[in-house]
Length: 331
Image (tube, rainbow, N blue to C red; front, side, top):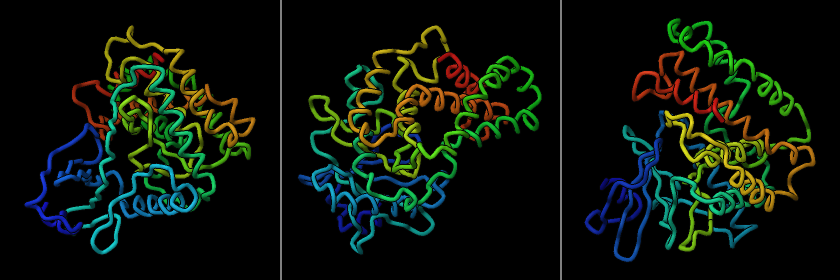
């Protein structure tokens, strides 16, 4: 920790460092000095193979917003003493520090349609303000992250090479997911359709990646590691996947799974208010598909991992990823 802090010009004796947050990928701490507070993160380079590409993307967005939208609250990294936005310590890993946004908080579970609306509006605003950037200039931090065609092909491969007992026991769910292969076929059409534009896309629009003020108004989006070129259905779809049901994908009581219509309408309203001038007429018709796209893809990924003996997500108990896939099926 002393080496990290000194790289930013901090004295360890002046700082109080504590673990922070509930993120599953990166490790996070708070740093408190007299009158100052920061967020320190260590990048999980087992997931993000090229952390320098994350820094490249964030620097690109920071520069653009600083020139064109100075009033937008963008959580850019604090520079090291030698002017870098990410610190690499050989043999240890990659770190970055952000100033803590005062009078802000995040939430882990969407509890009201207003929260869903506020978050959707902020994610839409983020993409709209960055519409002047050529999305192809962004580097790929997670290759094929939301490529439904790839995920369907991986599912098919698992049916040929996966654990035979898991495959037999999952026969009904496999048949159900195969019966919806048209969702994957529609995605192939989208990729070939010039009416669908590649934009600066967040790709991880869960509610905890939005900061709210003291009166629960969203003020900015955070956690920018997955910023890449993408289609709007990724951001809208991920909001639907994580906001619409009152229970998570860990829920074992499938009777509790439901689609909250008022939350769906709030997502569409908030996102469209910011993005209506950017979306094509064809794209505007695909809000409902966005949800089926993302929920179906996640079901495929969970079941694929189950058939492959949980090599990607891991499992806290036997059949964990099978249950996760079943929750997606019940949407």
